[in-house]
Length: 193
Image (cartoon, rainbow, N blue to C red; front, side, top):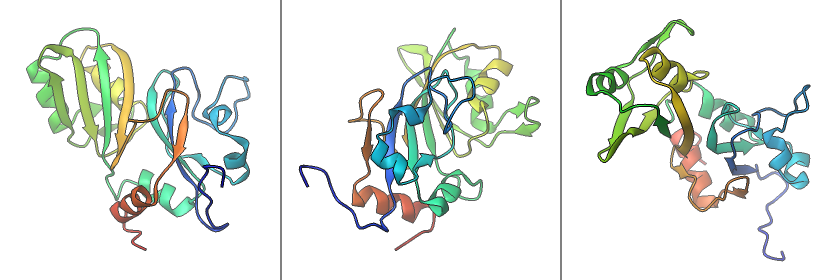
C-alpha cells in the first residue's frame, strides 16, 4: 500500500540496518546514549523488533533486527556457524604470519577461548585493509584478536551476515528483507518452511 509491502499480522519482521558508528546495540541506554532503536521507525518497534547479536559502539555496518525469536536464537547460536564478513582498517600492514594465525584461530585471554578458524583477505594494494569472515561472534572478537597480535583497529564494518550484504542500505537507514532473502536466511539455520 502506498509503495510499502504489507504482510499478514503473523509475518515476522526481519530488517537490515546499516548501523553508524556511535550507536549502542541495545533496546535502551541508561546513560541516554543513542541506540540502534533510535533509527528504527515506530511501526517496527511496535511489532517488537530487536537487534540480533551486537555491534559495539565504535563498529558500523550490517545489523539484523527481528521479532522472530527462534530465527534470532539460531542466527546467534554457536551451533549454526553463520558467516559474518567484516572489513577492517588497521594501523599497520597485516604481517603474513599474523594472517595465518587468524586463519587458524587465536587464543583470546580476555575471553578465555581460542577463536574458530576464519577466512582472511588483505587488500593487495594496502595490507592495512583486511576482510575477515567469522563463523562465530564473540564479544569484541576482532578487536581482541588484532590487539593481541599488536595491531590497533581504526575502523570496523560488518558488510555481510550470511547471504545478506549491506549494499543498497545507506548509513543510518534500514530496509525489510525480501521474501527470497528471508527464505535463504531461514534455510541456512534449518528453519525450512
